[in-house]
Length: 577
Image (cartoon, rainbow, N blue to C red; front, side, top):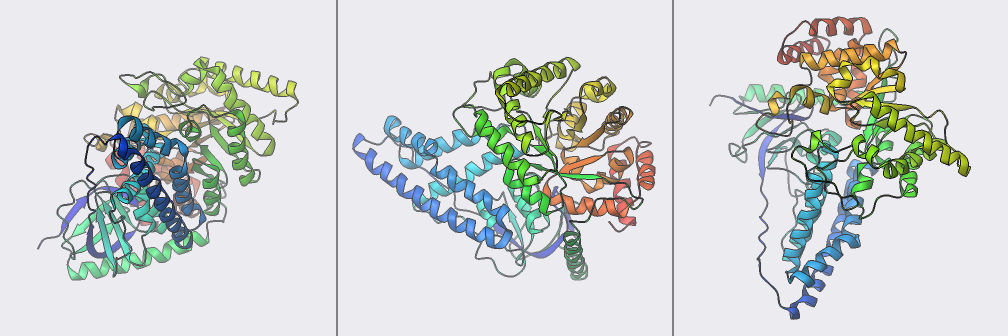
């Protein structure tokens, strides 16, 4: 039978070979009925028992994850346990049982969906994954309520290529990389939990494959994670070749991890800043363990999402202080709240909009609600007394917005001085360059900031008019599009002219295919997910700035993204990277 190549999205690099195991889970079916008043107490009792069982199961998963993946990866299941124990969740379910006369399972389903949808509607991939967390918790809780077996993969043996519609965090926590040699999902992308865990466990993964009905249990398959491809009906000779390649890649990864603490310096002596993107202080430790020299993006949205009320100054201060203390004097760039009409917040009523990604969001809300903005700025400034906390404004489109935001910073500083509260008077302030208007006129913005950080996720979307989450047009989302590269080049040149640095905190910063081009364009700081740091650092340490400039110059002569990608990959291949 002729070999078949299936194309998806790269989730985790490397090559994996094994026999296919298609993971299917018994569907949850909840009877929709109105219970009687006499049944309410029994349903509440059933809910409380199911919650306790869920807590115990999550504790066991957390302990297993800590033993197999480490403390940082296990933290997500500790967080899951805290969510289950949160009275906000249980009280909401009980309210549906008492007031809506729903069964415990039906009430749990409705409440979980409401909470999860709030996160899943968000633009930020990291925040969308919090919706996946809640769905996972809800799935476990409802299975316990209905007396069903929990999801699980602990029974797998041999060397398998795991194929599934999608995998929950609980599913991935049970993965054994000695058994699961490759991962394939019908949905999801590089920011999904399945992809993140695959990278943590160093399991090659291809996501977003779409139709997985072609896979049959027991057939041989090859997962080419770097290319985002899956091969079926592979000849025995080719299968052996790919198996040997997989072994060589694992050995190469081990070498990279052992060199993670080495400095990110090019062969001709240029020091490059490699930072991590995080959503909470606990993530910062993991990023540093893998070689991060700072935090280039500390997302603050979760502080606004997890409570019914706006986060207090003290709550925010403690979160930021914990992060800067963990970094021990290294930079922590804290992005001010990046929320908008696509996010349903209990703590802040935002208007529904036809196009929330171009509407009332991010810095526009902050400048409209300066009371909320100033509270956050005071917290960041206070944290700056304990380390190198820096401020970064999202979605800036005009110089007027920077001036207005800086004025609020000055007001916050004046208040702290008057109150005798310590802070760093020279706290650095930067902006995210994610709107094409800023990139095109970057030289107009440098007098008002200390640094730029290019947010390539939105810069690409806005430049190319492509919703990267829309599966019908996702292929048009091209970070290495010639127009995007020219905007990046102009931004970097403008900052260097002003003796400032430009960083990048979008997904492109962690894409090895883009590394040499970005180095050649003069990018000073790369901020990425922790798992990408060792690979990017290895490239940085293996090249010279001059050869990267030549690569960038040649890439800029090309007229299509596909040409540029193919060329960049060929250069890496020639260098054995």
